[in-house]
Length: 302
Length: 299
Image (cartoon, rainbow over all chains, first blue to last red; front, side):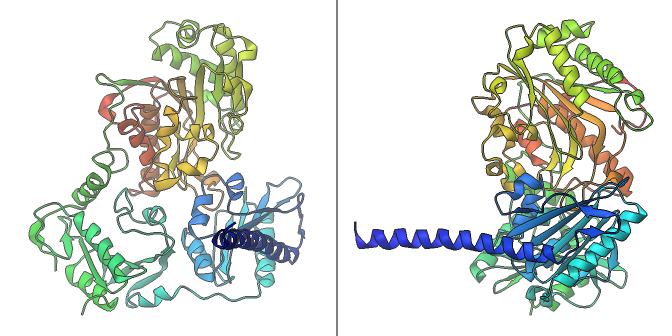
């Protein structure tokens, strides 16, 4: 056997071994976190052993939403179900997202609800508590919200929070968002055009070229009663950003003279600009000056 | 700086984008065209009965059976359901009932049972009928099936926009995630695989308590289902799905008090017609026959 083939086979074997060990290690860490969470909370007791899922088996557990967490590069998930007499179940899901940026991203996928002082950010709504801390996204879902289930879910949330020792940092790209008028609860961080489509519809195709190697942040603004949204995308290099902007501009109907933007007949403005690896798009701005100002503050216009 | 003179609406903008991207197949949610059949309309029967649920939201099988019978007879232009079923299947058929077992909103078991009874009543041998979801590829009846009946509840879906009749066949491939790209837009291709193509005799979209919005990893909240008390029955899965999708869109608009399009856009429905020739999605190409209760039908 040629030496190059031997090296290739050794590399493949080492890679596979790394993946196996990495998967096992993730599962062990999730199990370790779960061990810190009591199996009895008020009247609710854990039912059966915990279930763990990796990137392949997660499809067996959550139908449809698996792709959402995979789009945030989910590494593993541990699920535990709590039951109590006369109550519907409470489902605890611990997602190891690999990085705190993606834990934050998974949290921002659905931001509706009341703010909770738990983890780095927490929310509660209709029987569903979720928060992120470190590289973990935590979901606690009461299949039917009762006073007892709500209390148990909160106690569970506190126990999980205490079990996560690491802190988490928000993605750095958030630092590029203009500050004035930012609606903090509107911020979404993502990598996938399907996830972007959950918040704003541009096209049925991935015209911005979003993917695992890109970071995008979407946020809403209100200034002097005028609204707008800002989308920032960070690409691997300036050429990718330029190509994405070209595709975005190609959406304009023929004959539109505008170079950067489109003014709609409803008075909404769509503008874009690129600076190096960053593409900035202002969507649905209720005034042209507001759109221009946001692009400037995102440091994509001189 | 953009100039006011362009006078382009956001709707134009979106349409243009979709046209560029999809070759005219998909615009806003369900406005696309389809070319499943050269002429005519696809018939969809929408039947509703408030009596299908009891006071505790449990299904009344007798009422459900009557709904299905009425719908099938109307679909086939027959005076009674038995005659209609005899035109849908023949005694020599081997029939797989493709159901859906999603735990929060499964195909109601009474409906599976009613379908089984009707098929046997039409002459299909008992051992040649089976209902299955996750196990269809290994199920011996499905493996030798000559006919399929497709039945599932409609619900919103994190990645495909909607859990639809078209999507219900994803278990006919060994690796479903291979069809997840771009919001599962290629699901229609599954219907053209050799072990599926041309076998579907009837589609039943269950709209008894549809799910119009989803949150969280499990995409379910009791607050986002509502009693619609309906079934949508058609031989055209695209037409049935498009009709169901219009109802879901309308419900979202009514519930949220604003336009909240199904997200992501369930493009797989339109594409199933335009690219894979499975039916028609445009409202003007769909003949809706309404039976039963008609209040709050939303369309």
